[in-house]
Length: 221
Image 1: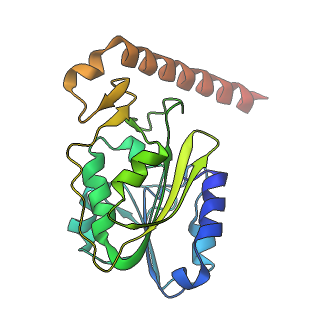
Image 2: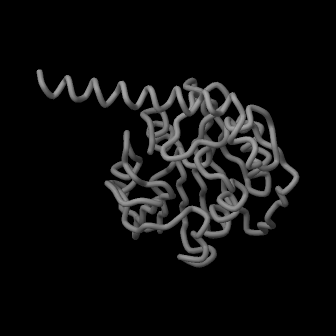
């Protein structure tokens, strides 16, 4: 998934020489509302692989974000793209680690994710919100080239994995969870039963029902 601002960020910050003849991996590539893929493929990479946990447009291989290194091997890609994925994975530490490890030294990692204030969107799950300082801390073991706020409650980032890469330990880092409604290191089972989260789920389901009704009525016009 990738919104218009995300596509624009990638188009501005990924240079032709960083793409041409390079191996590209897109994590969470199912095209729901846009994709960087057409722009990148127009720059002639040697390989473009899109992965997601489910099949769909833009998905070449089904692979969980937690299993990238297991599937492809360490340092397999020159550019790793992950747009609108991190907020949806419960074990964000494992996914961040896989994004770093599957990228070659000297390679590029391009990230977009949602920040505090963005509405709950469980497709199929929604766990976290990242502020600019959060992604900066999580990728402080890389050379951070660009961090930008998305006006639509999000953050964009481009980093380069350094030749002397040494992965940062993140086990003690807390993050705001939309499930717990506070910063936590881990989401506990009890957090899924709190009143705040139950109301979020109910509101989200109501929106889904109303959307389906609207789509049905529109088809009858």
